Amino acid sequence: MSTTNLIRWSGLISITAGVLYTVGALLHPVGEDLAAVINPNWVPAHLVYWVSVLLMHLSLVGLYERQVEKMGWLGLVGFVLAFVGTAVVGSILLYVFTVLPLIAGEAQPIFDQAATTPVFLLPVFVLGFGLGWILLGLATMRAGVLPRWSGLLLIVGVTLFVISEAVPFGVRLAHTLVTIGDIIFSLGLVWVGYALWSEKRESVENSKITVRVSRS
Image 1 (cartoon, rainbow, N blue to C red):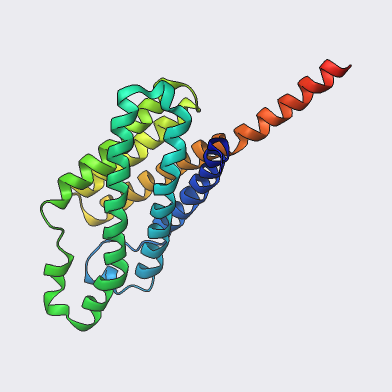
Image 2: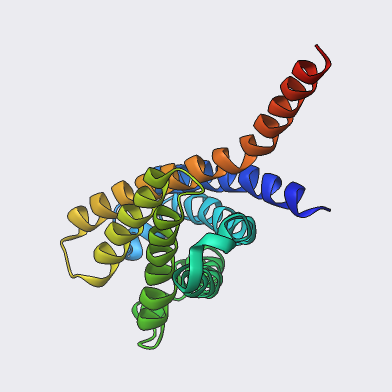
């Protein structure tokens, strides 16, 4: 597969990831306690999130490749952190929708222990997924290759998400913040993806116009 096709298909993957990320956010029950985990929406929501994050992980390659010449060190650091952080989020989600519901249903006395995030994961999560996507959004805005506002949506969305996870808000406020953040982040992914997907088509159409003009 050529680099051009890789970038284009990564755009379609990014669009799909963004749509699924919004679906996951809307399906997610309020809270992350025992009542939320046994809620019928818990597994579908996190399954959709997981598929979205896997696709997001793949789309990162094309997103970075398209802008690599103008992103500089900021884009490189953002890409590496986002790539690692997104992989970590994917592994957490896999545990959350496979193992945790079993513990909630069969071994409730140890649920709180099983649901507690290990101390080392929070900095990895914040510095990886959070800071990585923020830097990538900033680099996108600076590069000017893709729509700058799409980079801003990525920054705002992931910032709200990280704040909702890191700051001890009330359950409903945290849920509202993370939902809004996820939807904004999704819009950024869709916008970036559309720009990547439509780029080749636009260049082909422009080439056809050029050929017609040269022949006339």
